[in-house]
Length: 360
Image (cartoon, rainbow, N blue to C red; front, side, top):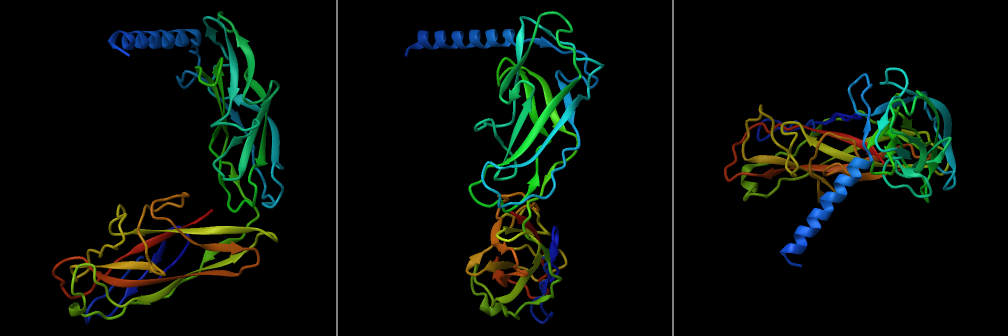
């Protein structure tokens, strides 16, 4: 059995006497009136927020700003709620303009700076659970109104803007895992949060958030030898053979006193990566037919899912929590044959499954 973080592999096999399994592992007039009013309102809104932006180097209808060198260090995951974890003020530079910004807005509009999603007290949620973001310019913290743009060309002509980005703990408890922030974090729109997009602000490189929590590495596994199974014991579809136990073991270290992280696992069928059922597909080299493999955690038959460490991945399951000072996490599992067809052909029964660990 091979196990390693990312595309780890499980191997199960038996001798060829019976099976071998090798697992890498109103009315009408009112309706008309309502529709006409709605269309009129939509046309009015569109006309109000029409700004011509024609001088971008990439042909996009809005300006793009880059915010560079935002590199948060490791941080204490146990700090109090509303604590600022990291803050940086830098100049955001336009990356797709032919010099200064030149817009012609008819009629005039007011720029409105807004972040992603819905803020609470000017703090926007991020892709990392328990961490929010506050973005400020000289006009204040988003969402906030900025400059007005008039109906003559070149009404707005700067290419630099000071931006302050703060990362703030929003969780009541501990932060148990890090992650990568979305690249785009601030938008400038015409008049309000739903107006025409005038500018977008992006980080220059991926921003990785790293709380001081334990980290783990899978231990090199041993092959799992499956129990011999005779076809007479597999009397009906769904009947199973004897289980064999094995472990996925993680060696862990790091973190700070009081910190912890949660390990989740997804198993993926190598022969059929789209498999979201709970029977592992035999490999093409197998001789046996009419059987598959089930993997269980306790009494739970585990399903298979996409090879991804994203939180909430299909058929992802909780493996265990790792606390500060815990040297290892052993995940006990069992594997067994299961009859999948009316007729069973004896011979080698090889299969492969990978697993991916997600820390959350």
